[in-house]
Length: 195
Image (cartoon, rainbow, N blue to C red; front, side, top):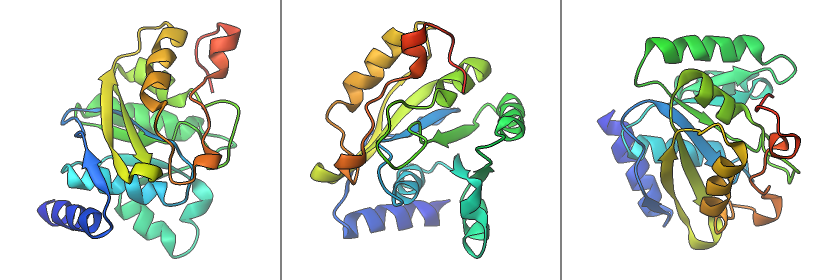
């Protein structure tokens, strides 16, 4: 653990990225946003390792094909088959129930491309596990990355997402043109979050 922490902090210093905030020591859902680049996985890993954390990270299953698969698994990667995510999510919910320090990183945008809505999975998993949500970020223009506020969903999706929007208002990602505004489809329908 100490080696990973030292490695992460050294890499951040060498690349002139500034780390702010801390990963909470207890369990939780860590949102990684804005998700605009393939480098975002490495960025969230550096944030976690620099803080001594070893969360699991949901990553599209096709990235586990070939030589990259063992590296992703060894660094906490969990393959997610987007066409049938149910089994993966159920396994993660069981792991969260069995381990109070369980941490899961989710890129709420679901894609590196600009989209219309975020995926509600982070919100739904937090509600089901009673784990808090911590907002992680990367901001390319200021070369800053880290963790922001932690909250428990209130059940009022619009109010909770207003808090999320306020935090991410000045966070642009590595490729700002790919940033998706933090908005859930469920805010417009008034329905509980379901992916």
